[in-house]
Image 1 (cartoon, rainbow, N blue to C red):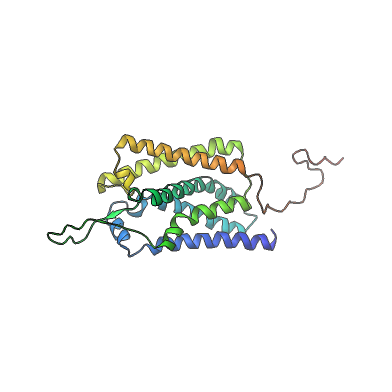
Image 2: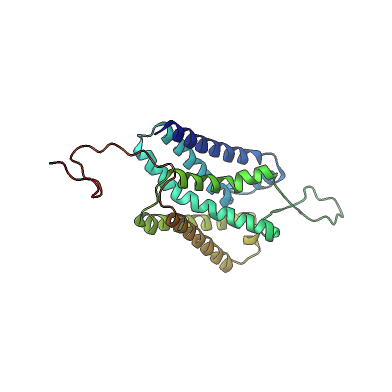
Length: 251
């Protein structure tokens, strides 16, 4: 790996993981954090947090691979994680920012007043995160994962997309749908208002739509991706080895 490629890759991976981790910690001590932590399941109710945990792990593994480029097994693990974390973060960003600008009441949680003054007619107020924290949680993961894929990763094979990506997306949908329903059965509300406002059949449709968006996004990104901008350096080809028909066996 050239020094320039190493510096760029390591900087992207390390800074991405750091910013995401900072964004999560920056929620600590806020009214939203206090409200969420008082509920069963805490922050794990949020798809944003589950997706970000996968994204941080993906970037940390990518950084380790930058340091140890011959650790091929770890590269495969990172590449597999990226196959699910990238479409998840695309979904999180698309849903969050579109609803935030168009229908904020469907995505911004209304926090109860505590304590409620006697005789008060005050209503719960929407909680808005600081812009830099919002960006760290809902924009940085998708942007940096997409950059990592475009700059350094080769495209996924048809088999990986048709079977691997599809299986992981369906498994994630089943897991998160079951988990968030379980959490809400104790809390009485869902982490996202657009789930709270809808009955179970509609929520199932929402889960299916979100899963479909994730699958379409990874397929589209992969189809448009021909080769990495900073592809891995070509390895020396030993004498007598034939690769993809481009090199003739030496007699």
